[in-house]
Image 1 (cartoon, rainbow, N blue to C red):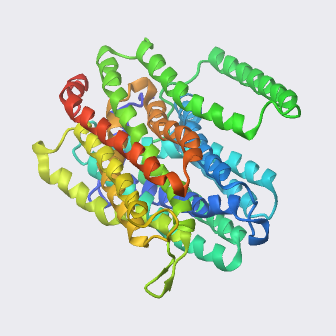
Image 2 (image 1 turned 180 degrees about the vertical axis):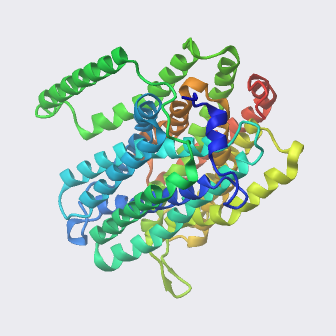
Length: 497
């Protein structure tokens, strides 16, 4: 039997058929479209569901606690990608991971659509965390499998894929927000479940003819002894953790606030351990070690960017609900609709950015320079949103165009950093850790949201100028440092441009 390698995989994929890209991009584009439809539709109303009063259909939680839980939830969603990447690399491959993940996500949304209690909320979150950890990093890894390392279509292909993500994220808050406002939260969550079901159908029906060998192999399979050890250690971990929780929770020694703090710690320590393990692994070559060192400052920049961007679903969502005048030009706006602004701007601008990168050719900015622009724009987006409080004070309703402008500016940063980061991760990843390195990329988002779970507690309308100013200013300073270090980082990338 012929050994499966990168060239075998690329040769097995129909190389034209979707906007000049490999045909498999069609399958992954629409699978991720529906997965993001389900996730962002749910997320657009979830924080409101937590802090709205019971008579309004919510759970009646403290607002700042709801914001922290939302950030922790986001952190766990991306942190679980570590497990999903490991399982794909060592147990069942990326294609099966995507399918299993979609099933868990759909079940999570179904549970959330059933009127219940805080317990139902946490069960739903657990299912979606597991499912997204399996699906999210691995569907992106399969995109990387469609291209040879020297294929110049790769960045443009990831930008097209990224546009599919945001088409789903744009449409769902509009529909889910409308259902929530007119019929209640649980109808909105039910629509999210339907979206994930459609995504599973698209993946199953089209993968055989479009993906070839991409995602079908296990790059670093467990040996029988490793498999036995993995099962044993997992069982021990579940038993120990379950026992500790059974003892600590009734005594009040493990609370929601304790859990929030632990997630923040894990958000920093897990990526650190990952970098050390990959760097010291005997399966990592000298060139790959150099590329890992180049990846570290990019990872830190990504954490800074996502710490700002992800507050669009927490602080800025609350800002839209509590601080924004929703009666605008005779229209009655829904707070959830503002969650569609980010993906809308990406849909409009992603083709422009993809065209610009290809058009520039050899003059295209290097990866670290693109990252520097990304966090520069993120910082500016927070400086913009502090201006309404400066001009009008913390007690006046704000013109919604301020929010629109802030979302627009951060999207300029996102398109400079996020699709480029996906592509750079597939280029810089050690061969033995391909899917796991993609999980590491998503851990930058997990780390950011773990940090946010602490930061959002300090927000209030009275101190929002300080809040936005300090975080935005820190991002701008970091961007200037990254601009200065870009030539050094590029050298350590060892031929990756």
